[in-house]
Image (cartoon, rainbow, N blue to C red; front, side, top):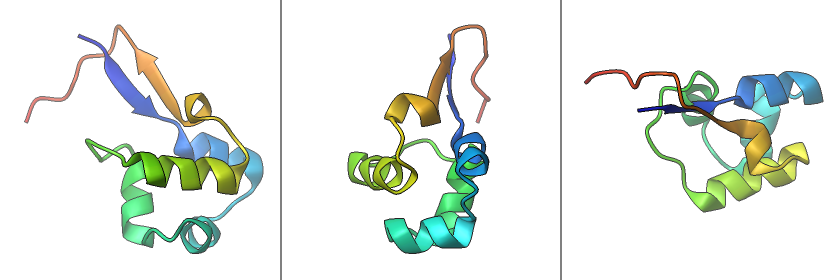
Length: 75
């Protein structure tokens, strides 16, 4: 089974946006955004995704990627 990969770090770098700036714009803590940035989350609220997309002027597909060949991490 494939895996969803978060590309928030890449989009932030392209937009030259820091974690602190994005955190303030989106209203999500630095810790939670850092977890998103490193892919250490298992879910994301649509409202958070919408706020991130608005702040970074991007589409959800710029942040989320499906890799059919990647294997999910075992718990």
